[in-house]
Length: 451
Ligand code: GLU
Image 1 (cartoon, rainbow, N blue to C red):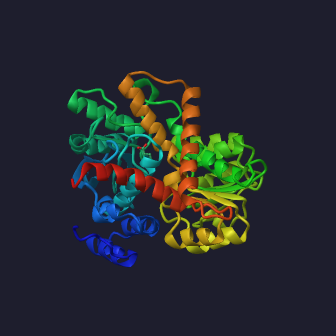
Image 2 (tube, helix red, strand yellow):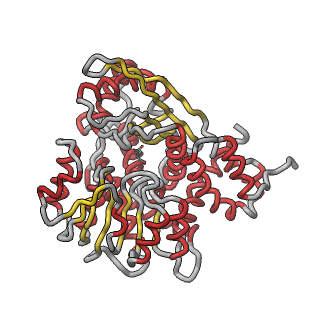
Image 3 (cartoon, rainbow, N blue to C red):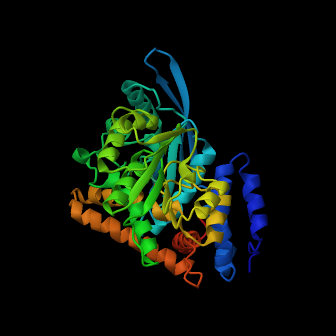
């Protein structure tokens, strides 16, 4: 028998840290998964012998490239672009593209790692990947955005394909950017394929893809509450972010009878004690997608609301919380405050918004807490459905897709219950999601041997 990898968790993490210096986000994401998987693997020799976790935590490849573009003033600008192809054991690499100045290789490696488990949880055949650039879209003209997207795709196109790797949107990349990138891909390759998701409805996109991440997160939240015999009617919700995920999460909370108190962006948060209803949500969508403004402008339009500069909204008392902005936006002390204020349930719309301290706080308090890889999987799930529709060359109806999204979120919830039930009525959703996602990918990898 070969020497197996029966190292303990601290030794395993020591190795991860050593091999990934200066990549704190990636190390954090691996740590959160490894904490649960080590327990699960304790009596499963084959996972150790085949070094499965070690292999999932080493991306299949990381492609890094230069992206040159010319700004409106004629200056030549240079950005770095990446595609991290983490794992394709159960399907083509799949995951979004993020344009934000905070993007680093560490951030994209953590996102691609998380995506691997998330995509497995959806039950659809998708591996895990992620890409992006440190390009800052804020303040750029539409022509500059277009030129950047085209330049980015001029390199990326050789690494992707409908059966190879299928990118989509993420922070800073929405329908407009997907359009520019798809146009460039088509121009270079002369192929009209389902190489990207999040496309426009006229050119291969899927209904409800835009709404799916936010709606899915609220479906998941409702599923969690239902285990306690509760629903969202009359519940107050604190939401961070004001982009695609946050506004659609808010919309679904309102539709299910809840009251949304906050939204935010990197400048601070707005608190509207009257509740952010559908008309106000539509106003925010227009502010962010059309006028490209800042959330603080909300208080001029709705004077009963207040704007709190430079702060996150976690101190506002609420029944449920949905972090829908970005990684590490909810820290240990925020988690303590939420719990102390009586928050019953947290469903993450963003990827890894809660830091490790916060995760441990929610787990210790035994509240209903869903990690992003479970609760925000609705977006990539509908991306998976977009891929199927592209392969079939047809478009499914909205009702069919709505039902599929609900069923997928319920399926993920059930997987979490199956692997996360701790007895005494407490479900550790982090553990459930980690184990269910890991098991599927790991078993596929075992079938392939050492590759
Ligand atoms: N960026 C989204 C996520 O974090 C969606 C990815 C996709 O649709 O491929 O899951």
